[in-house]
Image (cartoon, rainbow, N blue to C red; front, top):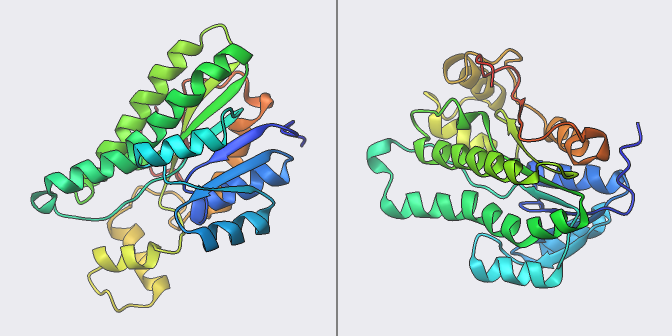
Length: 257
Protein backbone atom coordinates (compact mmCIF):
# COMPACT_ATOMS: atom_id res chain seq x y z
CA UNK A 1 0.00 0.00 0.00
CA UNK A 2 1.31 3.45 -0.93
CA UNK A 3 0.82 5.71 2.10
CA UNK A 4 1.46 8.79 -0.07
CA UNK A 5 4.10 10.24 2.25
CA UNK A 6 6.71 11.12 -0.39
CA UNK A 7 8.12 14.57 0.35
CA UNK A 8 6.16 15.08 3.58
CA UNK A 9 8.32 16.54 6.36
CA UNK A 10 7.90 14.46 9.51
CA UNK A 11 9.33 15.28 12.93
CA UNK A 12 9.46 12.45 15.46
CA UNK A 13 10.51 13.11 19.05
CA UNK A 14 11.99 10.50 21.37
CA UNK A 15 13.28 8.97 18.18
CA UNK A 16 16.73 7.51 18.83
CA UNK A 17 15.40 4.27 20.33
CA UNK A 18 12.29 2.18 20.90
CA UNK A 19 8.90 3.18 19.51
CA UNK A 20 10.12 6.56 18.24
CA UNK A 21 12.98 5.02 16.29
CA UNK A 22 10.68 2.52 14.60
CA UNK A 23 8.16 5.25 13.75
CA UNK A 24 10.93 7.36 12.21
CA UNK A 25 12.29 4.35 10.33
CA UNK A 26 8.87 3.45 8.93
CA UNK A 27 8.05 7.02 7.86
CA UNK A 28 11.43 7.30 6.13
CA UNK A 29 10.83 3.98 4.36
CA UNK A 30 7.50 5.38 3.13
CA UNK A 31 9.27 8.32 1.52
CA UNK A 32 8.86 11.03 4.16
CA UNK A 33 11.65 13.51 4.88
CA UNK A 34 12.17 12.54 8.51
CA UNK A 35 13.70 14.69 11.23
CA UNK A 36 14.71 13.14 14.54
CA UNK A 37 16.04 14.83 17.65
CA UNK A 38 18.10 13.79 20.64
CA UNK A 39 20.42 14.91 23.40
CA UNK A 40 23.51 12.86 22.53
CA UNK A 41 25.28 13.96 19.38
CA UNK A 42 27.05 10.68 18.58
CA UNK A 43 23.95 8.52 19.05
CA UNK A 44 21.79 10.99 17.14
CA UNK A 45 24.18 11.01 14.17
CA UNK A 46 24.43 7.22 14.13
CA UNK A 47 20.66 6.69 14.18
CA UNK A 48 20.00 9.41 11.61
CA UNK A 49 22.50 7.89 9.19
CA UNK A 50 21.09 4.39 9.72
CA UNK A 51 17.51 5.30 8.80
CA UNK A 52 18.15 8.12 6.34
CA UNK A 53 16.86 10.94 8.53
CA UNK A 54 18.06 14.39 9.51
CA UNK A 55 19.20 14.74 13.11
CA UNK A 56 18.79 17.86 15.23
CA UNK A 57 20.57 18.08 18.59
CA UNK A 58 17.77 19.36 20.80
CA UNK A 59 15.66 18.33 23.79
CA UNK A 60 12.02 19.47 23.46
CA UNK A 61 11.35 18.66 27.11
CA UNK A 62 12.85 22.09 27.82
CA UNK A 63 11.65 25.41 26.41
CA UNK A 64 15.16 26.13 25.14
CA UNK A 65 15.44 22.77 23.43
CA UNK A 66 12.05 23.14 21.76
CA UNK A 67 13.04 26.58 20.49
CA UNK A 68 16.27 25.16 19.06
CA UNK A 69 14.33 22.42 17.29
CA UNK A 70 11.75 24.80 15.81
CA UNK A 71 14.48 27.16 14.63
CA UNK A 72 16.18 24.25 12.85
CA UNK A 73 12.90 22.92 11.42
CA UNK A 74 10.48 25.86 10.98
CA UNK A 75 7.64 23.86 9.41
CA UNK A 76 6.55 20.24 9.39
CA UNK A 77 3.71 18.32 7.77
CA UNK A 78 3.68 15.53 10.36
CA UNK A 79 4.44 15.94 14.05
CA UNK A 80 4.77 12.77 16.12
CA UNK A 81 5.01 13.60 19.83
CA UNK A 82 6.55 10.41 21.13
CA UNK A 83 9.02 11.69 23.75
CA UNK A 84 8.24 10.27 27.17
CA UNK A 85 9.49 8.56 30.31
CA UNK A 86 7.93 6.00 32.64
CA UNK A 87 8.60 4.28 35.94
CA UNK A 88 6.80 2.32 38.65
CA UNK A 89 6.65 4.13 42.00
CA UNK A 90 4.35 3.96 45.04
CA UNK A 91 2.05 6.98 45.18
CA UNK A 92 3.36 8.07 48.60
CA UNK A 93 6.89 8.19 47.18
CA UNK A 94 6.08 10.38 44.17
CA UNK A 95 7.60 13.75 45.00
CA UNK A 96 6.64 17.18 43.73
CA UNK A 97 9.75 17.08 41.56
CA UNK A 98 8.63 13.75 40.09
CA UNK A 99 5.24 15.21 39.16
CA UNK A 100 6.90 18.23 37.54
CA UNK A 101 9.48 16.15 35.68
CA UNK A 102 6.91 13.77 34.21
CA UNK A 103 4.63 16.62 33.18
CA UNK A 104 7.48 18.60 31.63
CA UNK A 105 8.81 15.69 29.57
CA UNK A 106 5.64 13.80 28.68
CA UNK A 107 3.15 16.64 28.28
CA UNK A 108 4.81 20.01 27.77
CA UNK A 109 7.28 18.72 25.18
CA UNK A 110 4.41 17.83 22.85
CA UNK A 111 2.33 20.89 23.72
CA UNK A 112 5.26 23.18 22.88
CA UNK A 113 5.83 21.64 19.48
CA UNK A 114 2.13 21.51 18.64
CA UNK A 115 1.90 25.20 19.51
CA UNK A 116 4.83 25.91 17.17
CA UNK A 117 3.63 23.89 14.17
CA UNK A 118 -0.17 23.66 14.36
CA UNK A 119 -1.01 27.10 12.96
CA UNK A 120 1.23 26.49 9.94
CA UNK A 121 -0.59 23.26 9.22
CA UNK A 122 -3.91 25.10 9.31
CA UNK A 123 -2.58 27.81 6.97
CA UNK A 124 -1.37 25.18 4.48
CA UNK A 125 -4.59 23.19 5.00
CA UNK A 126 -2.80 19.91 5.59
CA UNK A 127 -1.07 18.34 8.53
CA UNK A 128 -0.94 15.54 11.05
CA UNK A 129 -0.33 15.84 14.79
CA UNK A 130 -0.01 12.49 16.54
CA UNK A 131 0.49 12.02 20.26
CA UNK A 132 1.89 8.67 21.39
CA UNK A 133 0.20 8.10 24.73
CA UNK A 134 -0.51 4.75 26.43
CA UNK A 135 -3.28 2.51 27.61
CA UNK A 136 -2.35 3.96 31.01
CA UNK A 137 -4.25 7.08 29.95
CA UNK A 138 -7.53 5.24 30.54
CA UNK A 139 -6.40 2.37 32.80
CA UNK A 140 -4.08 4.22 35.17
CA UNK A 141 -1.79 1.71 36.94
CA UNK A 142 -1.83 2.08 40.72
CA UNK A 143 1.97 2.06 40.77
CA UNK A 144 2.37 4.57 37.91
CA UNK A 145 -0.17 7.30 38.73
CA UNK A 146 2.14 10.15 37.78
CA UNK A 147 2.79 8.51 34.41
CA UNK A 148 -0.90 7.82 33.81
CA UNK A 149 -1.70 11.46 34.58
CA UNK A 150 0.55 12.61 31.75
CA UNK A 151 -0.98 10.18 29.28
CA UNK A 152 -4.51 11.33 30.15
CA UNK A 153 -3.33 14.91 29.65
CA UNK A 154 -2.14 14.01 26.15
CA UNK A 155 -5.62 12.74 25.33
CA UNK A 156 -7.11 16.06 26.46
CA UNK A 157 -4.67 18.14 24.41
CA UNK A 158 -5.14 16.00 21.33
CA UNK A 159 -8.91 16.09 21.43
CA UNK A 160 -8.92 19.83 22.12
CA UNK A 161 -6.62 20.53 19.16
CA UNK A 162 -8.70 18.28 16.92
CA UNK A 163 -11.66 20.53 17.63
CA UNK A 164 -9.73 23.42 16.10
CA UNK A 165 -9.29 21.59 12.79
CA UNK A 166 -12.97 21.56 11.81
CA UNK A 167 -13.42 21.88 8.04
CA UNK A 168 -9.70 21.53 7.29
CA UNK A 169 -7.39 18.77 6.10
CA UNK A 170 -5.47 18.78 9.37
CA UNK A 171 -6.02 15.96 11.85
CA UNK A 172 -4.95 15.40 15.44
CA UNK A 173 -5.04 11.92 16.94
CA UNK A 174 -3.62 9.93 19.83
CA UNK A 175 -2.20 6.43 19.62
CA UNK A 176 -2.41 4.32 22.78
CA UNK A 177 0.19 1.52 22.84
CA UNK A 178 0.21 -1.20 25.44
CA UNK A 179 3.39 -2.38 27.12
CA UNK A 180 5.97 -2.34 24.33
CA UNK A 181 9.35 -3.97 24.07
CA UNK A 182 12.21 -1.49 24.50
CA UNK A 183 15.79 -1.27 25.71
CA UNK A 184 14.68 -0.45 29.24
CA UNK A 185 11.74 -2.83 29.56
CA UNK A 186 13.62 -5.60 31.39
CA UNK A 187 14.68 -3.18 34.12
CA UNK A 188 11.07 -2.05 34.41
CA UNK A 189 9.81 -5.64 34.65
CA UNK A 190 12.38 -6.35 37.34
CA UNK A 191 11.19 -3.30 39.29
CA UNK A 192 7.65 -4.71 39.57
CA UNK A 193 8.50 -8.43 39.76
CA UNK A 194 8.21 -10.69 42.78
CA UNK A 195 11.49 -12.30 41.67
CA UNK A 196 13.67 -9.70 39.92
CA UNK A 197 16.30 -12.35 39.16
CA UNK A 198 13.99 -14.53 37.05
CA UNK A 199 14.80 -14.98 33.33
CA UNK A 200 13.44 -12.25 31.05
CA UNK A 201 10.82 -14.54 29.47
CA UNK A 202 9.53 -15.47 32.91
CA UNK A 203 9.47 -11.80 33.95
CA UNK A 204 7.35 -11.01 30.91
CA UNK A 205 4.96 -13.92 31.51
CA UNK A 206 4.54 -13.04 35.19
CA UNK A 207 4.00 -9.35 34.40
CA UNK A 208 1.13 -10.01 32.04
CA UNK A 209 -0.43 -12.60 34.33
CA UNK A 210 -0.31 -10.33 37.37
CA UNK A 211 -0.13 -6.72 36.18
CA UNK A 212 -1.83 -6.81 32.76
CA UNK A 213 -4.31 -9.70 33.00
CA UNK A 214 -6.76 -8.10 30.55
CA UNK A 215 -4.25 -8.22 27.69
CA UNK A 216 -5.59 -10.47 24.96
CA UNK A 217 -2.22 -11.17 23.38
CA UNK A 218 -0.38 -11.72 26.72
CA UNK A 219 2.94 -10.53 25.33
CA UNK A 220 4.97 -7.44 24.68
CA UNK A 221 3.98 -5.38 21.68
CA UNK A 222 6.82 -4.87 19.23
CA UNK A 223 7.75 -1.26 18.32
CA UNK A 224 7.19 -2.05 14.65
CA UNK A 225 3.53 -2.81 15.40
CA UNK A 226 3.09 0.69 16.85
CA UNK A 227 4.94 2.23 13.92
CA UNK A 228 2.60 0.62 11.40
CA UNK A 229 -0.44 2.32 12.92
CA UNK A 230 1.30 5.67 13.29
CA UNK A 231 2.41 5.59 9.66
CA UNK A 232 -1.17 5.07 8.54
CA UNK A 233 -2.48 7.86 10.79
CA UNK A 234 0.23 10.15 9.35
CA UNK A 235 -0.90 9.35 5.82
CA UNK A 236 -3.37 11.20 3.61
CA UNK A 237 -5.25 7.88 3.53
CA UNK A 238 -6.37 8.48 7.14
CA UNK A 239 -8.16 11.74 6.37
CA UNK A 240 -11.43 10.67 8.05
CA UNK A 241 -9.69 9.76 11.31
CA UNK A 242 -9.61 12.85 13.52
CA UNK A 243 -9.90 13.46 17.26
CA UNK A 244 -9.51 9.72 17.86
CA UNK A 245 -7.82 7.70 20.59
CA UNK A 246 -6.53 4.69 18.68
CA UNK A 247 -5.67 1.61 20.69
CA UNK A 248 -2.76 -0.62 19.75
CA UNK A 249 -2.59 -2.23 23.17
CA UNK A 250 -3.11 -5.91 22.52
CA UNK A 251 -6.70 -5.68 23.71
CA UNK A 252 -5.72 -4.66 27.23
CA UNK A 253 -8.40 -1.97 27.50
CA UNK A 254 -11.77 -3.67 27.87
CA UNK A 255 -13.85 -0.50 27.52
CA UNK A 256 -14.81 1.17 24.25
CA UNK A 257 -13.21 4.59 23.90
